[in-house]
Amino acid sequence: LGAFTGMFEYDYMKLNPLDTDVWDIALLGHYQFTDLFGLGLLYSHEDLETPMGDGDSDKFTLSLNFNITENFVVGVDYTVVDAKIAELEADLDQLTINSLYSF
Image (cartoon, rainbow, N blue to C red; front, side, top):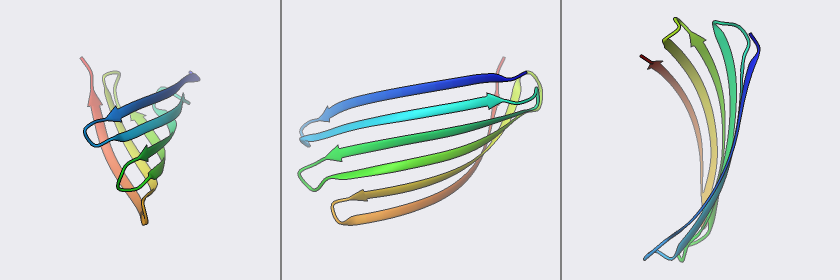
């Protein structure tokens, strides 16, 4: 099968009345190895400047996708996030299971 999907996204916004500037990028790569199995990698970065302090975050996601039928997909995602704003830092590890039915 061997189907590849790639994506790049850039966004900038100014949030008023908070006087906050936000920009972010995202990169996605997904490869469908067989009719049953696909693997995806996602990276995103967000940067913000606020009167309360500046911050940024980096997010990495590994996604395993299983095509149960032509219309039904089950995904298992593992995500790691590293974020900080002003002097505060946070790390997050997340495991999600999702499904998609199309008709």
